[in-house]
Length: 317
Ligand SMILES: C[S@@+](CC[C@H](N)C(=O)[O-])C[C@H]1O[C@@H](n2cnc3c(N)ncnc32)[C@H](O)[C@@H]1O
Image 1 (cartoon, rainbow, N blue to C red):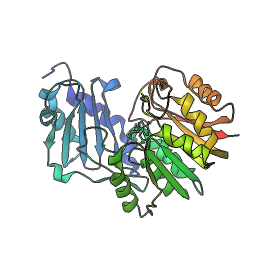
Image 2: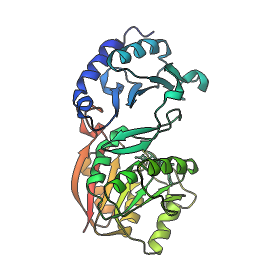
Image 3: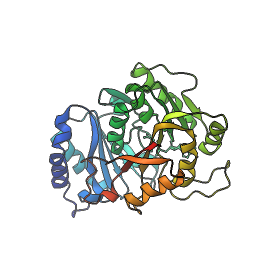
Image 4: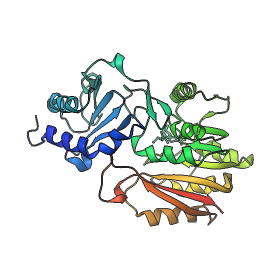
């Protein structure tokens, strides 16, 4: 056990710092412990309903029992899952297991602002809902009424589902992973949304966006949330850098109606917000202007805003 980490103290403080989230009653999921700034760099703990997931990049297996006790002192979790990152070179079965309770008690959905989002708790990667994007889902629910929305890099479709629950007339999700369809469909069904045959396009963005431009497709809102590192596509000659906003925004701006919005999620920490905004505007050939800014909330504490998830909203001029 790493005796230098005082888990009870750290988790106690983190729990108390999130009182506003616990009292809000508007969602059942948040980040309980953000190790990067709260005292244990390689560890994050997230709550989804009655389940907690302890994710670790450092080998803290000897500390897990103490972490479990500290969590149970604050909340009657029915399941606490330990998920070790693959960077810890041990077999999968020794990295991921239930510390408390049984996987059969895992929740199938998270609830947030009256919307249900499907979860796959024992997935080796994110279980389906990125908690730092909670304010993005809230924004979408408030700004999508009557709009046709394109959700790029959709993953489980949570951002598009938020837009639909906010009155979007259509959401089109695009992602290259074939495993996502049943997870998107589960969220539609649970929220009483109609799943149309064209709701999900499984494919590469660098293949489908040029095609959509050629077919003169138009949207009133585009969600652009590329992963921190976009890989080279077999459908494009160019070598993407980071989130590849220059190429992606260039294409998105051609698909947006006047007064349509583009929402960009910035995951890299190596540039100022100002720089990122002007990069987006330039990539759109000055057809966009910034209208709003926000970051992740108090469950991702960081004194430096440039190290939080930064979100910018642009409008097509
Ligand atoms: C970080 S997740 C996006 C999170 C999502 N916006 C959300 O809020 O849940 C990144 C997704 O991008 C997809 N992806 C990566 N490269 C892609 C590409 N070239 N074309 C289509 N999808 C891609 C991956 O399959 C993955 O699901």
